[in-house]
Structures are given as structure tokens and as C-alpha cells.
Image (cartoon, rainbow, N blue to C red; front, side, top):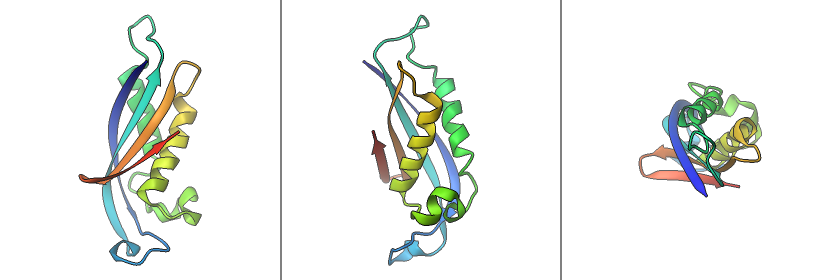
Length: 122
């Protein structure tokens, strides 16, 4: 079994709903995102997936969030744009782009700060 991981980032604003504290007010983050995929064996190139391809797929998903007010984007109108919900959204969108019988998306991590992250696993 092999796993590869790539990271990218996006910037956006949000406010947490059903929450009492500073984060209920409008604020922004520079989120760092990582995606881990696995495969049982490599292909003829010796890779389970090209890092460039994985990063392109991840960036395609992140483009839908970058420089947006997340509370106005469809999945977060009803669900507060917490790091956990953002991780789940990215995971589900990314899985549509990369998953096949040889590659499995293992996890998506969302760092909202250098010291705090949420991880969504399947």
C-alpha cells in the first residue's frame, strides 16, 4: 500500500453560526489544505498518482472557495462553515475527481491556523 499527500491553500471569510464567541463575527482565514490518497500498487511510471495531477484536482475544488464568503456558498448556507464541514465538503468534491478502482482518497485536512486542524476521513 502506498500513500501520497499534497497541500494547497485558499483564503476566504466566514462566520460560525449557532456559536457564541469571537468566531460568530465575520472574519477570515488563510486555510491550508492537505489531501492523502492511497493505492495498492504503482503504475508503469512507479507512481500511484502524479503529484501534479492530485494538486490540480485539489486546486480545482479550492477555486470554488477561494476569496469567497463561505456562508453564501451552497453547502454552508445551512451548515456552518466550520473547519470540519469545510474538510467534508472538500473531501466529497475531490473524491468525485480522483477516485477510481486503483486510487482511494483517504483524508482531507483543513488547517485554519498553524496549530489547529480538522481531518475528514472516509
